[in-house]
Length: 406
Image (cartoon, rainbow, N blue to C red; front, side):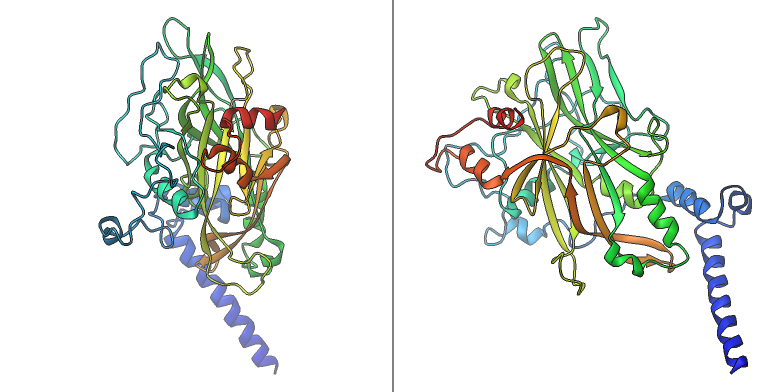
């Protein structure tokens, strides 16, 4: 029996050593000096970040097939968002920002550079909030060129307004609209590899992502450019951004701008005070069911809103997020600039579908989302009030959200 126990111990020891040797050679590239300086797992993260490339989303995030695009029996690309012709669908008009009254200019390329130096961006003015899942998915797919962009490592997490033109009549800034945090679902902690469990949980607990719309300011007030950036930072040092792990960088691209909501009838963008976004993620189909099934694709909407015209030094923005498959519209608690690293606006519990080399987590699946909110209302109430065919008194989206805030 002693010999059998010793043999079993040696087998475990050999397997563990093989895994570490494999990771050291293939993932860390045999860089002993880096391991000696940073430690094994930190060196792994550094090398992963250096070699990370953004992957095309796998199923169920695949684009519609060519048949679905061309076959009118299956395609939904051209189906109007409402059943009435009086209500405009998503209009691909150019949004004018307060830069000498000149419309934005940008390329129509679907591929984006990681650079965030561009000062203008074409975004559609929209007049309908997508309701059904296929509507959101269609608009999300069409917004591939308007994904959220990560700020480079080493930049300030929070930046005030700086001049955008020589005359210093127009300024640009990126205030934090909300923050996102991740943690391993306690029900699935036992699935984490014992060797890397502490590292995985520590990494998620120690970092946050700030979502920041680009806002311009002139004598008339504030306006959205349609561009959204994100700052990834360590909660212990919330002043400078850092390079995220590849899994986080990929998830950031799942935040996309659908457009700026236009309440006017003549394209007057002074009333376009709400930036509408969608976020796509993999979700556990039944959050209360511990029997793990195949994860499903899910979408939630975000509305970043300028409550009123203002020319003060502090931009006043609020964020609304849908919850429960867009059943509820929730006003998120305001982000305290002095304590942005404390509690995230949105906290997601996750589990992992895979562990590469039996250590490295991959394919996160959301098992639950908790929003830190001030108030909530059914999304159906808003949809009815925006629909002129619903038989109720209609309201403008900006007015509804203003009233919601006040």
